[in-house]
Length: 294
Image 1: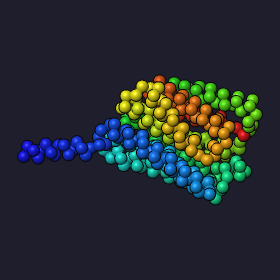
Image 2: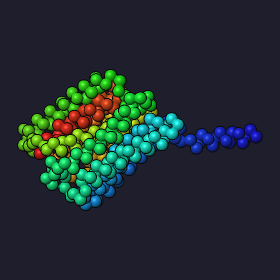
Image 3: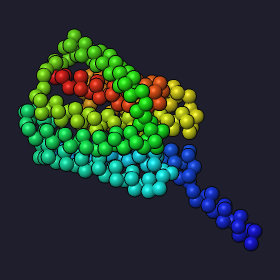
Image 4: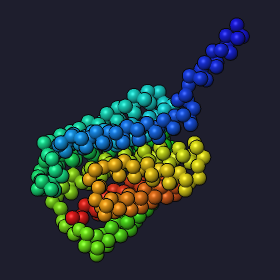
């Protein structure tokens, strides 16, 4: 009887990999990237914009949010179901916006002369999943501990605005005096769509790369901050640099420079506040500034 009892305990230990933080966080960091890379490339194989964007967003931002929520709610009853429900909300928002604003298009809205079309106002749908997650974080300590902390919110937002403004000013100065491209005002519908999309994209990126990856590398795998930041930044860059539209060497250099600056800044802000919020604000503010290019 005693041997059977010991055998039962040993089986439980061997079979509970998800209960071991190193295994769980390792999977949480690796699996999303293994889905994102082929997902982005598969999306680019489609001829029209709605499929390209939807598949890319489903394999990156939707997965990022789902993994963050799963890690945050792992020990809660029905935590997995909650994470799937949140990811599904993000998936449906992406599907709805892309098929309502990009159906049949083969070029970007501005290139196709559709920047002022009212259909772009459907981008407001992106506010639904973003708002749902931010509201959930206000009353859920698990999301707070996982990195979606709203303590000292004014300081977090202020730090993000300052950091994003500095990088944005550098960007505007560079394009203004280099002559690479101009600065132009954009139609209001396109600006609304851009704001909502950046809220959707930037929050998902910060939740995964800072809230899951950077935190895991430091707290679970015990890497020093600079090593963890380097790995996180490389992973963050990877989902953008595989896109075919960055084949122009000069454009590729600019994308690499500013994405690196944003990722490093977001990591530093996370280190200071232990929250993804300032990095989210920084990324969002810079992205909105960059809309005026070209």
